[in-house]
Length: 181
Image 1 (cartoon, rainbow, N blue to C red):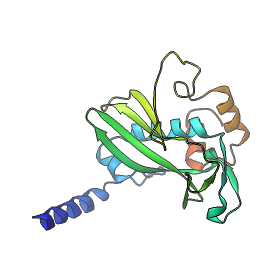
Image 2: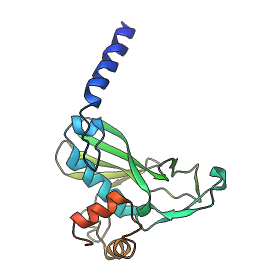
Image 3: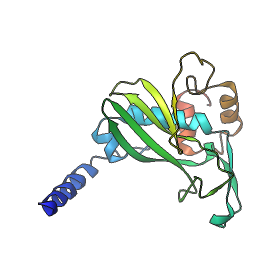
């Protein structure tokens, strides 16, 4: 019975992996299958805006002496989870598409937000989570907070000043949103 379940899961995965969009953004199969492309784009945009101007230095453990800003790094989809009536989209930052930026690879690592939670399939963002699983509830009273309004003046300034260095996805979204030309 257990083997039959594995075979069915394998067939289901194979059938649905072909449904991944092949556009410039390349949505993960789970996102496309659940029709969450708008949530995916919103999450990725918000996570970039929250951390784009934060600099990190790679640890000696990875044997690369380099530093970068999160806005220059690739933000990759990690997981999609359904918690009762809440949807969580998780992503992680990767240096050179191969080294995950986390406590093991970044010198004096400070947590960055890597998950966004939505109420059901609505576009209503309810909270963020960082790598330490700390949950930040969205408080509408903090109107100048990046969590509420991601395009704070310092974020816009960073995007405009570094537009040629930004991650290609982030740069294109900034163009679409008319932050840069």
